[in-house]
Length: 260
Length: 303
Ligand SMILES: Nc1ncnc2c1ncn2[C@@H]1O[C@H](COP(=O)(O)OP(=O)(O)OP(=O)(O)O)[C@@H](O)[C@H]1O
Ligand SMILES: [Mg+2]
Ligand SMILES: [Zn+2]
Image (cartoon, rainbow over all chains, first blue to last red):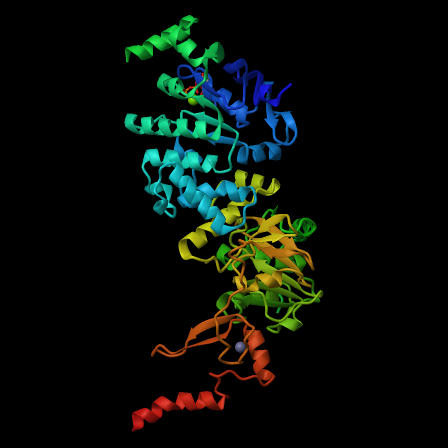
């Protein structure tokens, strides 16, 4: 079997309860290398809960999250040691928070923010780290002259682009994003989406993007999962689901957006 | 004169045992911060209550005790800690580094190499080297346990980005035996090389933060740096004006109100020892050239 046919991430029966309340339940899917998966659904449908279970910020009650690691091949990340999982979090995985300030160190310069992951994996040459940081600022359309400025002096859109640079500098293979364009002005959102699309294509990234903005998935996602009350009610190719939704809830979701 | 109202060295035996257990654990895991139940001491936290508690736990009636405050034995802080143990433990005290068996210090390591028969006790204000960038205690603890120390280099990176070089000159972070990153307390980085392979036991006490950590004798201690910005144990590029030493850490002191200044050894015992042995600096009154220079302005006024 060719390795290309092996999923990069294989999610099996993930459930998470908050007390007696369901966060998400029975979620399974495969993500193949280079694929972008969108997760949509109304507020409270369990999107963030699922994402946090996948990256290990939350411990799921049931299920497996099998990642195709570089060294050991497929491995269940929910049972690996915390240090191994955190190492993944600094190398092959990236997590882009909705609020940039949750994903940035606000007291550290832009260059330091981007360089942190490099230093975390052992880079010890200041000049090299700085060069890579500067290069990445330019790739996310931030003037290299801002390398020593703190993110507090950046606009919301710039902060979000900085967070993306900080995450992508170590060349991760899988990027998790929770509402990456939420809270930004519409024009700023469009620019960020363009940038993300370019990066995903150029780097051949695989990604899981949570959003309730269908325009985001239309532009970025190859495949789509629709969630309601913690469960996946429909999944398929993005265009198929958006143009011809089968589940009554998906139909409602699509039509309500079209009305806007 | 011993104050009989207290147990030997002020703390009760049970508390001292608890502190000794923390010290032993610290020695067993060099550089690891051991929590301990810090006690109220009859002095404010800023006065080194962590160091005082560690000293109290290790002192025996046979010990000779020395206190250094930024190199000097005669500051208010040093004098009161010394007299505290004279009163509560009745131990002999000294200002001579070589005569002391227990030395409590703030901000310096003595210039004179210490021996296996000595214990150096540091007063520590902030034991957590990662605090600067990660204020969450739960997170820093995890970083230590998982050896995630990239953040320490972010701090040094920021230094270079801002100043062009690593400007951290005190409390310069070190890695102990290739494992724990440790804050050596606010000693000048000039003293960092003395931390490693030291013959004496080194104990660190943080009172307010309730942490003890330790370096057993002959421990490997490496100052963090970058390949292209290597660690340098820098000091003022002068010699001591009093004793002429070129290898000791110097303080700059103002000598008069006309902006006159000179550099002198921060370690006063070291400086006095050298002068007693006949070494002379170029600002010393015993130096004929210096005496000439000092006399010069007077001559000019007369003409
Ligand atoms: N920490 C928590 N404790 C208790 N219940 C929670 C907690 N976090 C989420 N929930 C509940 O779990 C369900 C799923 O929440 P989740 O945050 O995953 O939804 P979401 O789809 O991300 O919503 P949004 O679009 O608003 O971000 C909701 O009913 C929510 O109230
Ligand atoms: Mg959410
Ligand atoms: Zn001197």
